[in-house]
Length: 255
Image 1 (cartoon, rainbow, N blue to C red):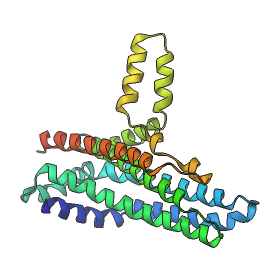
Image 2 (image 1 turned 180 degrees about the vertical axis):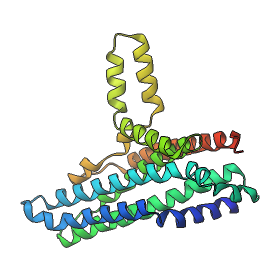
Image 3 (image 1 turned 90 degrees about the vertical axis):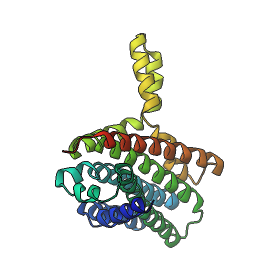
């Protein structure tokens, strides 16, 4: 357990110093701050505008970070040859992958907290009330990003950084379309097409299940048990794919 937590700590320290994290974080925070002066362009829709901009910025920043940072965590270490000193110590490959994942989760959680607090601050300055929808939507966006990050780590365990990022981005896009994929696949006249599309819809995570930005922008929220079920779905998916990544990485010949 201790090697895993130490790797998680080192991963967190490394990721927050990377240029992609700094650039995306500053860009996302800037968009949140921009939502306050933009409220002057609307009449009576301040809560919706600030919430829309804040949550959209949070969604974009978290998803992109989960993809590009997650894709570089294992494959990038192999390409830079920084992995070998760590594995030369009494650290199992499974502990290494798990620690990398936990470090990524910590980075995503830190940015999500900052973004949600920033959005709440803009609402306070605009004299708007009702932070529950923003908090709930932000929590689910974090779970969504953790799911995407888990997938990126899975791909990073057996391919290059570029391919892992490409696969992660593709799955993130398709993950918002799984409901439509299953629906239109069911309408197909081809049995093979139906099997493939419905099978893909079951394997690819349903990211829209964790996307309630529109609901929050209209000052509405889910029941907390419902939100909890959606969170458990995303976290369980992430745990399964990271475990698969650890198993694959454990079988790789690194020589």
